[in-house]
Length: 455
Image (cartoon, rainbow, N blue to C red; front, side, top):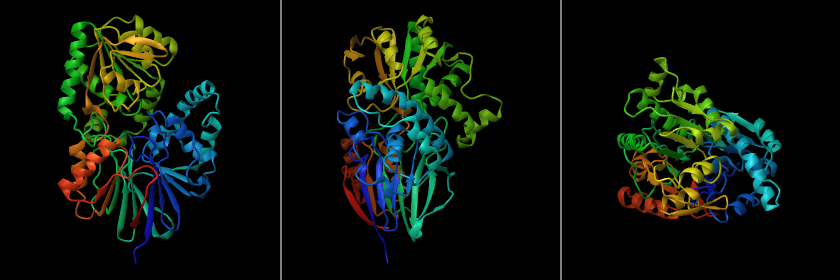
């Protein structure tokens, strides 16, 4: 006799951020992810709001990966009464703790400006850490009621996971964010054969990226143009994965003389710390990268690379002669050191401003990408004379065609697909494509909606 299980989409439905899904199996309540809402007018209010369930009644939280829109509210969850077990892969735990600790001072400053208490503190993070257990890929976790769980490689960032729940002969999979395979550093996303119910992301559910070769050629062309102009290549980059991929690609290009050597500044303390964690987990890299490591080469270490840890070091970048490359956080230009470089360099027509990741609606990065010729940064109006470019192929998310191909591999057993974690236009476009092309029962739930499945 089939069991009835309810899934409620408390975040990440009809939007990219705020990933938070509640599974009620009858024997236990299980959460998948608990992230910040980001990039919208009401996001701060929604992030601060009380949870729509009682955190003290949740015995398990499974974390797909360490981006803040998937882990940002976990300390608040603990603060509000969660005392269960948090499960993830080892890199996800290490990176999540790092990013959460990094976010505390930003939350504190925002709280002072808004005259509100901080969302959480260092003490809340310290209370969270003992609850967090690490599990490698494919190791089974047994829960009550005959439910078992394992992590599969999502290929999105180091240690990122799909969460596969099994009971009897049924499988329910939450994809988290799916990697843009093949990627420069990571292994390909694993397949989902045998899955019956799928909760999948749709960030790029309505468009395609360039191929791996095309994106590398585009990056090479951009660097060569910056060298010819004796200009500045300014890249707002996410600290986890994008920065490390860029360094890997640029290092290869400079070593093989595909591009002229020039200084490369990584101006993000968080990205530098993340890179050190990447070096700890070489077993998570793909065969090509492992071969390079085994050949005696150090990853993320080359003569032209400069890691700017302090504010004083960061200021020295302005004095460095062109051409040069500056990689700084945050990836959507919503804070961090990138905004100081944008104030300094966006007005220069010899600057190339390169966007390589998703830009949420309302973010500064999105406004620049959409062609605004004047933007306000820290209360100051800045003219945008730089050449603005986008290479979507360095996104760490699958595009439309690869999302469909991913689903197609599990088509024989799939009963229901729930399309989430994308702007509504992306989610609905992908939903219709899945129906039309594969004939599957796909829907795009809205925030707060619940569905019942036979699991």
